[in-house]
Length: 309
Image (cartoon, rainbow, N blue to C red; front, side, top):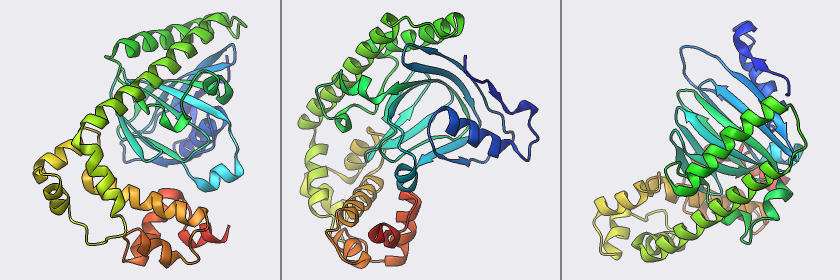
């Protein structure tokens, strides 16, 4: 079993620093941002099973953000599978967002920017998985994998049970080299998340939301694009438009804003523009000051810093 971390014995003035170090040592390098809370308590314990690290985490109200600057300095090569036990989590990666309720699972990579927030604290079971162990089991691009899996789904129920049993086994056997249990769990995990992604894509092709997204993406450079205009173009009401995006855990405005930020990020990193203003204006931002502040909040660096790298 790896080192047990618990903030209970730590002076309250040092708890955030202690917890940040514990998270970075156990999982990956992230910026730990404390959320408003009446108490700060965090603890972890876990074990190892084959090539997997399994950790039971009680987290304070916190946002864990991994941005571009950390990716450049800390090259962690693994996936994290998270089972929400208590509380609510909000995960963002690859321009997608997943709201995790108790029983739900999420899979995300250390090789791309991400954030996961627990506004009121949480308890989760986490599995740290070597990246090669995932990529060798999937036929799609890793970015195409589903971000989350509902615990009430058939494979979600099976995978959740396997995660709990695997953690109990690792704690009891203290680092056994038995490979069949983790291999079986990884096979089920990859099949479940790949299947969920396929079903979501099939549903999207039948939904007007996919056409709406394509239209909005094609008009990212128009700062005057109005949601009422988008709704009218696709013969739906504004209320229906908002409901379609709400079903994916976001809003039309938030989705459009994220797409514009991502497009500007790609334009800067791929050196398709020579000036920050060019990236901003081509993606529908007409307030350069606001664009720079929002960009830094999302990616941890300013557009100018990114362009100079």
